[in-house]
Image: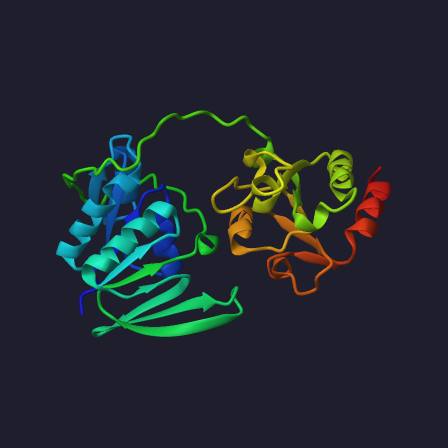
Length: 304
């Protein structure tokens, strides 16, 4: 059967990354782009046909209902999205409109006759499920699995069709304020702080270690959202800062996929955790199982 695959895109490089990860052919893909003209043109360079909804500086989520209606009328074989909030909103609405199945954390896709076959990771990547679903299936890919794809310098090869769509106005930008630069995004060395590095004097010791290393400090979500020990701009993760240091030293961080999504471009990752079953060890180049109360002072002494 003809592969009529639609990809929902609200961010730059999203379509190219999904095509590369799922090993799709650009000619089989139509990109539903919600955003600026620049985003539509950049997406077209991948070679896909583009259906473009001009968001006119509004949040993409204001066009969720319109995008779902467009997808429902087109009735694609498969609808694919990344795990951004905007993509999830559109995919969810499209699935409801089509009465379609939804699968998340998808890592592979194949289409045979009228059957969609997809693999997805479950239980914190401990297992891989193989699913068979009917056509008009909606799939979400974890951003942790996507590698950034540089835009092509070639002449635009895909067509761009502007789709008139009405905003529901449900979300309004009240203000846009720049966040003070933390230095994380350009740092060669980053020390990541998790809940395991906050008891007693551990946090102060971690600050001292970062100083002797000449490193910037980042953190997992609970450090800023619950304990408020560090500002929001130092949160590293899927919805936070993305870092690419030569060395990332993770101290007392469990290693959820949301946090690791911010470390995709780190050259070397070292994880220190007292729990030998911590998820972070699966994504680290080097791991140390031990008590931070012993390890951090030893590192400070060795580097001072």
